[in-house]
Image 1 (tube, rainbow, N blue to C red):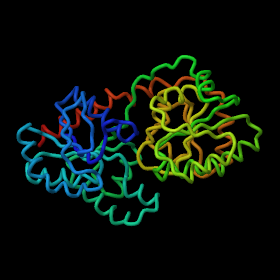
Image 2 (image 1 turned 180 degrees about the horizontal axis):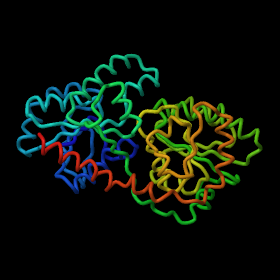
Image 3 (image 1 turned 90 degrees about the vertical axis):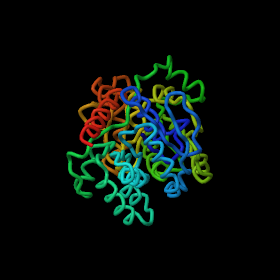
Image 4 (image 1 turned 120 degrees about the horizontal axis):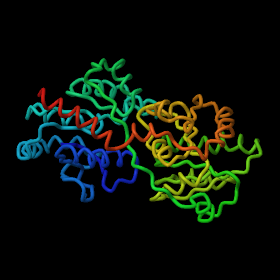
Amino acid sequence: MGVASYKVFPAHMGGQKAVVHFYKHLNKLLDVQLVVSSDNDASNDLCVSPILFRHRWMYLNVLKLIQLKKKLRQLKIQCIVAEHSYIGWLAYLLRKFSKVPFVLHSHNIEASRFQQMKKTGWQLYSFYEKWIHRKADFNFFKTAEDLEYAVQQYKLPPEKCSVIPYGVYPFRVVENARESLRHQFDISSQFVFYFNGTLDYYPNAKALEMIIDHLHPLLQAKGMDYTIVISGKTISTDLLKKIASVNNIKYLGFIDDINLLYQGTDLFLNPVLNNSGVKTKVVEALSNHCTVVSFQSGASGMPDDVCGQKLYKVEDGNWESYAETISLAQHTRKTKTPEEFFTYFAWPNVAQKAAEQIYRLIAHA
């Protein structure tokens, strides 16, 4: 049984896709039941029970314990997987009542992310996060960096941890993507660079501000003929005004099928300064053979030996080096992402690794 306390259907954003596609492929190897919040739509691929309180009221789910315990017994559930540390307490209580082991599937080190976002209370959350990870029978992390952090800071036994990365599908070729992009969005510049993300999420909004304030002037000083295109949901009025105040930058709104943008642009920009979890947009860009220029923090979870020359990492905050790297990276536009990348990040392989560990956990329960 997978437990997610927020809206994942339909899956538009990276975090939603991480849950839905993970269980879709895990369901081919195990019988999966997914318990989610009441604001979710129906799914044709999974057995979904939208019975939990919505995310902002997730702590009320203590009132759902009897219903969930009954479901565990009726469905003969042998393992619970809690999506994110903040709902781990519910899986822990279910284990206390039912003796069913639980896995904590961490998408980020949340306390570290909250600290970088300057959220109050991150120290308190760190105590909780350490506690719940140590109570879990096993822990999945999205990146080797997060796993190492948990082992060092939360004192987790390494043998109770594994990296289960965000997955990708074989990319769909968009014919004449470069020409189609320029025609559809009325772009005539020599180079087109791309940035996307959920734009009310602080690290993404901050990255976009820095693109405008720091990167844009440096690229103009180089005399480059370029356009930066931006896509994403829920952008603030202030950011829209900031974009409108400069040349060479276009906000396209939310784009449902972004393969055209990944394949039609010259580079994907990822100047994100948050080193917790994996940046799903980087994985998706590379899966479309789009070269990525990223700050070091934004490239966490991306092993060098599978990314080849398609991922350029720049020292955090060094905008002069970032602009220079954009100039140097142009020659890789037509090169392909290494096959090792697709092996490492393929959803079937990701699910297989998780299923094997779940089987082992059940066998020793």
